Every structure is written in C-alpha cells, then in structure tokens.
Amino acid sequence: MLETVICGGNEIIKKNIPFGSPDISDLEINEVVEVLKSGWITTGSRTKELERRLAKFCNTSKVVCLNSATAAEELNFRICGIGPDDEIVVPAYTYTATASAAIHCGAKVVFVDSQKDNCEMDYDKLAEAITEKTKAVVAVDIGGIVADYDRIFEIVVSKKQLFRAKEGNDLGARIQQAIGRVLVFADGAHSLGASRNGKMVGEIADFTDFSFHAVKNFTTAEGGASTWRDITGIDNEEMYKQYQLYSLHGQSKDALAKTQIGVWEYDIVGPWYKCNMTDIMAAIGLRQLDRYPGILERRKEIISKYDKVCDELGVSHLIHFSGESISSGHLYLTRIPGVTDETRREIIIKLAERGVSTNVHYKPLPMMTAYKEMGWRIDEFPNAYAYYENLITLPLHTKLSDEDIQYIVENFRDIVKAYL
Image 1 (cartoon, rainbow, N blue to C red):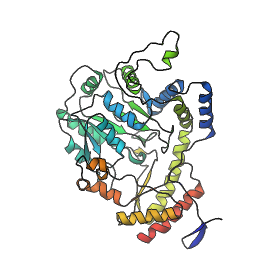
Image 2: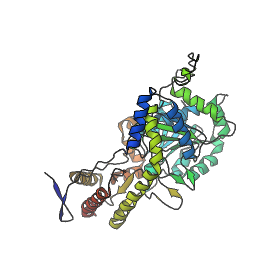
Image 3: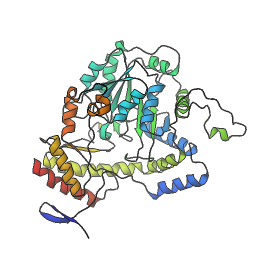
C-alpha cells in the first residue's frame, strides 16, 4: 500500500530518498568483472593507469592512488618530514580525518575558528596561530568549494621568517628546505574536479589529498590519492617511489614488479605502512573518470534547484559557483535562520518522516570526545559552533531523479517555512 504525506496542504505519495547513493553504472561493473577474470586483482596496471589519468586531470606531474584520503594526507605529511614537536594548523570545522592524519604522525594539531557565517577558516586567526613550530597548514575544501589558497599563501610567505626547516639531507628535510616556509596542504576530500582562478584542485596547494569513498562524487568504493606541485630541486620520481615504499611495508618491489623473470628478490627499506590501492578499486575509478564530467554537470543542475528554493525562503547556503570558483558540488549545506540546535533537530526529524534523509556537515571537532580529552573547548570556536547550530545538509547525488529533487524541494519548503 502506498503511503501518503501532506505537503503544502496537498496529499502526495511519500518517497524514501536516501541522503547518499554511489553512482555505479554497467561500465564500472563490467570493468571490475574484467579485473576479476584477469587473475590480477591487487595493485597493478589499472592502478597505474588511473594514477596517470588523474594526474592529467589535475594538471600535476604525479598522482599516487591509495586506500583512503586519510592515508593520502598522512603520507603527504610523512613525505615532508613532519613529525613529533611539529605543529599543524587545522580548521576546527572539518571531519576528524583532517586532524587525525597529523596526529598519526606525532604532530600537534592547532585548531582555528571559522569565519563568521562561513564554514571556511578565519585567515586572520590562521596568521595568529603560526609559530616557529608550525610546519604546515591544512585548508579544507568543504562541500567541494575551493578554499582561498591565495590568501593562505600570502600569510605563510609573510610568516617566512618564523619557519624552521628540518635539518638533514633526507627527502622530508630537502622538501622543507626547498619550499622554505610553512607548507600548504589541501584536504580535497570533497573537491576533485573543482577549480579556482582557472587552476584545478591538485595544482593549487603544495600537497593535496583526495577521497574516493563511497559517498564521494567520484568513488572507488574506498580509496584516495595524493598529488603535489613540482618543487624546485626535488625529483618527482624520487617522491613517487617514497610514496610507494610508505604504502607497501617499505618493500622495494611491488607484486607486479616481482612477476618479471628472475625478479623475485626484494628488500624492506623501512618498517612502514600498508595502504595501497587495488586494481579492483582502480577499475571502478577508471570508468568513473570517463563519466565524471557528466556527474559534475548533473550536480550543478541539482544545486541550481536547491539555490532557488533557499533564496526564496531566505535560507543561507553554500555558494558553489562564482566568478572565480567552480565547485565540485559535493555537499549542499543550508542554515535555517534564527533556529536553535534543538529546532534544527526537529526539522531533520520532520523531513525524515516524509522520507527525506538529511545530514549535518559538520559537528566541529572540539565538540568530539577525542578532542575534548586533548583539552579543546568549543567555546573557543564561537563561529564554528554558530555555523553548525542551525545547519542541515540536503541530499545531493546523481542517483536523484528530477522527480526526487522536486519532492525534496517541496517538502523542505513546506516544513522550513513554518519556522521562519
């Protein structure tokens, strides 16, 4: 029996709309089947092909595909020689992976507040947070909107006199010495395919990590990637090789290389990590990349429909497309004016009762148990809390039909206007 709900005084058939759903076609399925039939399912030729194609897509020289964005960010830090006694500045308004990857390296995380009525970090606060111990700042492209890296670079250059590069001749020390200032990292988990001032995410920051998790625009089920800008005096092949070593136990040859005649022997050059991508994952990614321009365009269409209803209601929302910035359109964040956290929760429940699943991105990290135990308090980050307090994230994925979008819009309008 079909269930109905009342929307705008009219009885309509209730839909059940998930917050997220991966966009997998027969192209991805068939490619995975080919991999399974090939007898080679771990890191191999498809992973290498995906790396080459992603590097071209991002306008960078090299990409390393891994098993998550968290691993990618951590290896970015480790490649750069960041570790104990170093400080990394991170927005308080982000997902835990942005901070935890730094903590895994033994570094100290220093949180900064958001801008007022904006989920982007407060760049004045960033400038104040930089000390002689600061080795890096991580900007987050929330929702797929590229952070203001021009401003960030301006800040780290202005603080150049405080920077203390690691001593020595190992790769990390040489990278720090070559750059000669606080390093700029992009958490691009949301922003593959986004650009700002004509530059793609990947070629903007010093180092960038991407997520290919199942909820992302571009997915390999799990997965992620690292990329970086060319650094004068640093060999990209040496860097790529070090990523490979870090991602496969410090093993000097991967499984594919050992298939060559007489090339069975390998060395372990460091007791490192296991976070490589498999060819099964890369097979999904290769066909996703074929389809990605269409996926981005569809997300843009959905965003335009959400913008229209939010502007009509006076509900603030992320601005995904502007004269200087093109978003990947990963998340649609709305803020209901004047409501409390308690009221926001009521609205989420009412939408769910009508079959519309929503979410909240994000609960600031100083509110989380792990970070509270490190001594952080949310009252130190009033802008981050204020942004979170009345936030609702609407479903935004390419399995939504036009009819689904209309249903979301109508029910969002009907429920939210009662609180305005």
